[in-house]
View 1 (cartoon, rainbow, N blue to C red):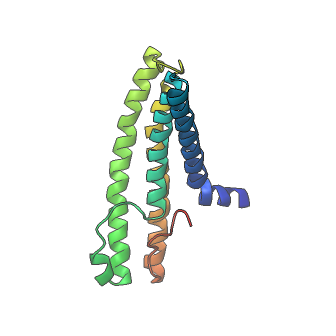
View 2: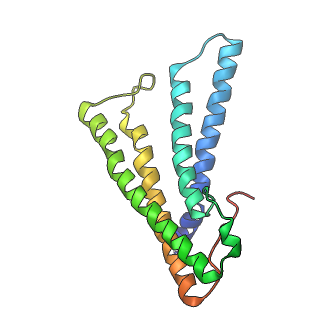
Length: 170
């Protein structure tokens, strides 16, 4: 149970750190190779590109989890706990509908790529692995929205202040 709780609490942090480190190290190696040896590789550019894509989608899920996504919260300072919880619930429901629709349509590109066996230019790996970043990202967003919704409903029922977010990194 502690393992699941730890994964729930830190999954996005570790994935973000992994993809960010991979992106930075690969980019540094490619800059060094290009400037010092006047040679660069296709695979380095692809690793950086696809790491950035995964970084963006996992970061979106982390932002939903920590309520760090973009919003206009001027009104939130003037609302009571009940109204604030209702507004957060409404926002989560709207975002949930959008995420479910986007998840459904994001599988189209993955399906087409799998059907025709497309591969990346440099790595020669199936593009499915990289196109899956979008459905994986939306799946994580949906999971975090459900958690947020349940947390807000609980706060609404008990009269507790609604969760307004934490820092992703200290």
